[in-house]
Length: 257
Image (cartoon, rainbow, N blue to C red; front, top):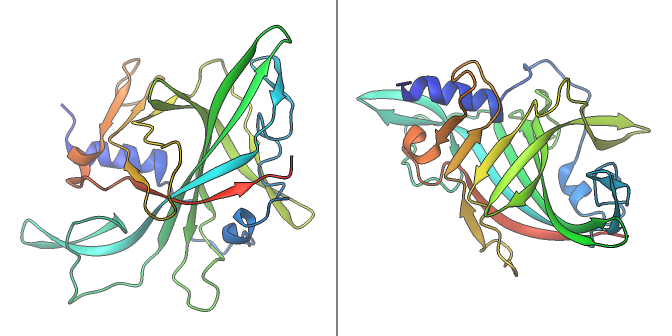
């Protein structure tokens, strides 16, 4: 059996991977992007501006995107009679040490949910898609929205039977002083599949009140730890924290479609 340190390391490589603290030219103000109904940040993704999904044309484009966010910051905690540096969700109930505070890096992970439909004319299939975008920020008081470590992992997927199935890896690209998400071409079929459980979205979320916890993340495709066996991350067990992956609904973006 793998111990929690190994699980935690692999999990962080999947979701919290840093690209190195080399000064970056990224200047993506995600707040401004999420406040702009005419944003082109999502335009290349299925269901936003038409296009195709599963080789069938999009019939009804997304009208809005619901934004859920989990925020993390570096902190010091007491563990096994030692001080330990860690990264905690801002909603975590784990006690932070107040006598040795640190001004460390922070990270936001966004789950961006929207609905669209596709079909071949004879059948219209409703679909709920989710985008995951993670951004790292350096500790800087004057320009808090400029990050030097660059964006973290980004994924696209759909909601199936109460869980989110991410099957596409995204990258953040820049063109004409603006940023947009673009899917990476898979080297082989079914090369990537990551499940988030549960998909705790609600029909009519309330700003800053509606929330849910991701309890498990499952890497379905082959991996270096489990080989061909899917790798299961039990989030509360690994981090001893029920709110380690706590997401809160913050707003909706009305799209100009």
